[in-house]
Length: 121
Image 1 (tube, one colour):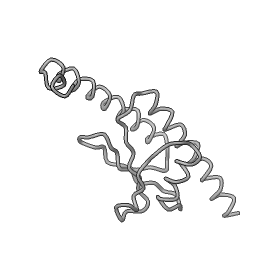
Image 2 (cartoon, one colour; image 1 turned 30 degrees about the horizontal axis):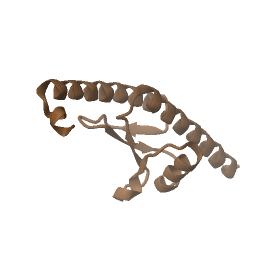
Image 3 (cartoon, one colour; image 1 turned 45 degrees about the vertical axis):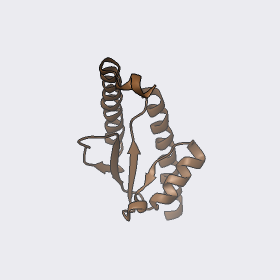
Image 4 (tube, rainbow, N blue to C red; image 1 turned 135 degrees about the vertical axis):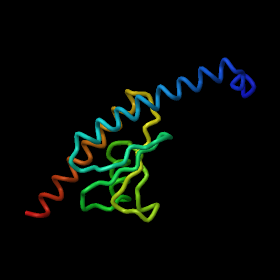
């Protein structure tokens, strides 16, 4: 199987599919990030990961765990890199799966914002 993937024609198709997924995934992720006042980010120049800063008073590891437990969505918390307040979002998924994950992320953020708002009252 590995030899087949190295065949120039097959390799070309694999690279084109990967590029298509990444370009579409980045566009979907950036559109989602722009709809929220919570996030700031610098667009990635390459790869399949966007590192975004968020403006909520919740630890990034707590956010990541809540997102995983409540919405079956995985992100990498920034405090794994000594940068709490950031999250690493992978966008190398097929469109439908990425959109579902970001919808779950939105739901989690809305829930957290309500919790923070209720705590402040």
